[in-house]
Length: 364
Ligand code: ATP
Ligand code: MG
Image (cartoon, rainbow, N blue to C red):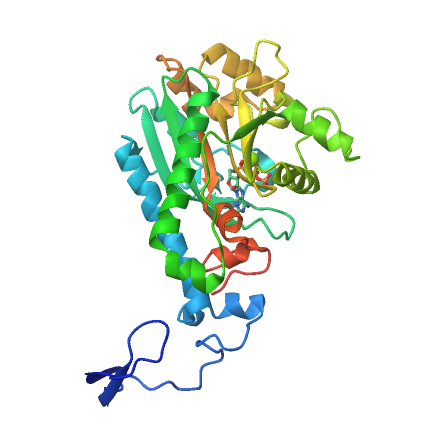
């Protein structure tokens, strides 16, 4: 529908401009009435919001969330442009997974087996000796077994890899500056959207607080939360830690030096052989990113694969790139929907993506 008319003399609406319509053109009449309230007067259940998202993005509340998502991605690209990162695209149909077999989606690739890519990890690393600063905005496909409020089966990540680093600190600097840039951009450019959502988005100051995995475990144990040696932090543990850190004034913080037992094979191990240069970034008790310095030495990489029970033969295409000289490098994957959950206080990751792919949803 569109109309012709003049601007109304008296403007009553708080948002937009009111007109007095003189002519209305109807392009296409609905076959049935709309199944949902697109004005936003009646609250809609999450199930219905997901089912009819394509209509509900007309509703100011729903629209505000996705306008902010749009601005997050624009701001990220701007940040990369300003900081000399090179945008790449890596294959989404792959022969081996970077994050282990449990969450791989298998598919038939002619007479062979293939998988949907869990992350661009291996490919972005392979490029580092030729293109030392890369990024990719990419889907992650993961067959997460459980229905949770923070896992999708198709989610989106902002992935970065950079070469010639001294340690994982260089990568953490990139990540905290990127997030600060994004938050500042949303605060400046999405004032109306934040107001519609009733959100006060606090500015973040860098550097973000850092605590080691061991310090995190000590804090948790002192609160009576049991963490076994060499175990990744559970969702419950992350939440408790988030609360404790918030009381100390930290909404966002790094957890560093994860033990090798909890990490992917590709993280660089420290001299002690126990800890690695892997970090997580948690925002209000939710993991939004993982990253670190990678192992760039061929022999060490083979050793790490064997320790993880992986067969180096299945990763020849990847290992080959380490034979021709690879600089020290590192990077991270930042979940777009998780970042939105942290920034906007969303309770369910499904609120942050237009079309949801989860355990039960394959349409629309
Ligand atoms: P988690 O432990 O929360 O399942 P992960 O450690 O397996 O996540 P990573 O491999 O570290 O995930 O992926 C990098 C980032 O991508 C995560 O920090 C998160 O923000 C996001 N991410 C990963 N898997 C999912 C998913 N299934 N749904 C939504 N976001 C995800
Ligand atoms: Mg992680």
